[in-house]
Amino acid sequence: MKPKFSNVVLADDDTDDQMFFEMALREVSKDAELKVFKNGVELMKALDQPNAEHPDIIFLDLNMPRKNGLQCLEEIRQHEDLKAVTVVMLTTSLSQMDMYKAYDKGACLFANKPAELSKWTDLINKVFTSDPTQLEAVID
Image 1: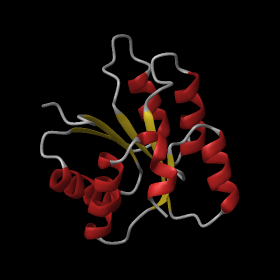
Image 2: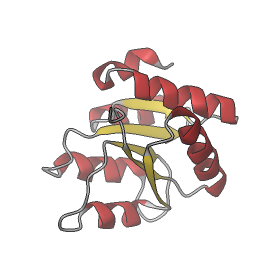
Image 3: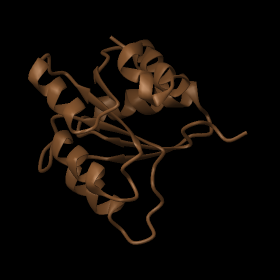
Image 4: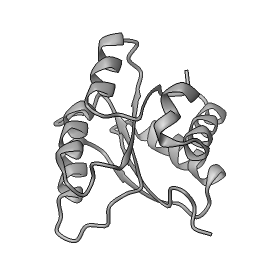
């Protein structure tokens, strides 16, 4: 049986967070294919390629150089083939305004970046086992 999210994308400029994310993802789903982008420009360039394989889920860092997560989210939601993709915003920001903007632009979840591998695993597991329309209610 194909996993719920088999084609996973992470856009994050922090190499430590990239490493933790990949390790946690492997614990949750050994079959998931992960593509990592270090900024929003690289992400959107890849997603805009003709015949690009579109992800099942995108994890977006809010604060990235060149093009931030909110800018990417806005473009993703305007892209005909990506409108329905599950998007999770990741951040270290405690700003309520950032959270409101993310949900307003179409994020399924706005989550604080965990500091420990076990918390990354918990986050990814909850996202992978929840109904995407109910993510807001699942994770605090």
